[in-house]
Length: 204
Image (cartoon, rainbow, N blue to C red; front, side):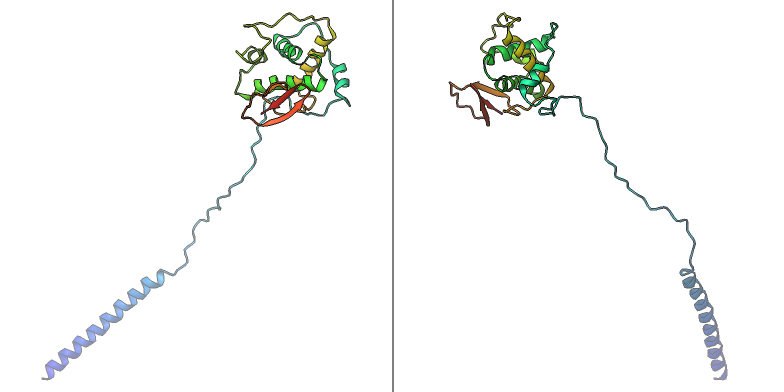
């Protein structure tokens, strides 16, 4: 009986010792989980937003501040010259045949339609291409226009207006127009009407 008690006591003592040892190791592992460890600090990622400025293609802006108080004064400042490029000749020709005898504002409005079309991406990209596009201008016959009396005042005026329209040096009364027709007709176009200038009605 005594040996059984001694044996049980010894077993209990061994179990206690083992429990203490295992508890100490476990406590050590748990404690090591809370030991601060120095790590290399990575700099925070910074996103810097800066505007990207891209130059726009050089193009005249209609309505730039002119060096004249009136359109007549600006016309008188133009150098008609004897050497017109084929493109400017097409533009001046369209102004001459479509609006000869109208006010300078009316001639400019017609000229700006040619310029707007050439720059719109919806029509030929040159003035001659726009003017000679089939079924657009009644004065055109095939790929030519009637002979122009280039010594006349009307032609010199048309050339000056063409230069102003090309430069965008004076604001048109029908800004942004791509179409026009004579005021005497009514084609019932489903377009946005912009203005009537002299004998023409302009649309976008």
